Image (cartoon, helix red, strand yellow):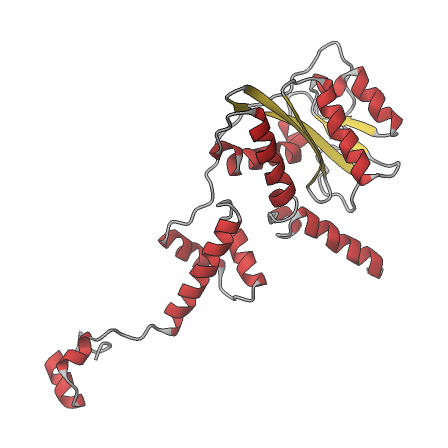
Length: 285
């Protein structure tokens, strides 16, 4: 009756089928497609909230597939749009580090070659700042270019060289890299200082620095801070620096390194990507 309601009169169809006319107004059983959509949307909501509102349809689609739910990416996007499930919006941010013209600068050995085949071959570093009611909190990180994992993290109220030294000291302690490590950064005075260069020389690290005025040379590190701010910091209001430190540490160590799917890594988290590499290496592939 529902399918033919625009072709035949309702009263005539009821008479032919020998059913009450009122049966037309009874609730209809949901279609298979409708039930599938409900299940997809329910799981999509769970994934979205676990991602802290940071996942859009591409990452949610991959997550659904890994749960065994087969559906197209456009279908996921359409269902998410229907209930207003949107990834956190992008906001602009400013550059932090400044060059000291009296310091010598290392050549750019990396040359935007961001595809690295194994861990602890290239680390990239950068600094940003986070506002609190007590004043600025400066955040220094080092990432392994292979997995995009944050391998060193330091935060302080002062934008001085010890900030980056603490970051790298932490990275060396936990990662214990070999002798073929390259470190890339911009030309900020923290990275061109004699103290930083002396520290890195102790570990036989090859230094590389971005070309003048070219933000793309350190794009991976800058992209990380872009992610940190647009997915987390921009939605927080910190009363104290300590509060910001705890919040940022939790985001990086618990979520970013271990859970957040990275498109460049085939939608694996940095920790998962390194684990997969280690398994392949041990199996001889």
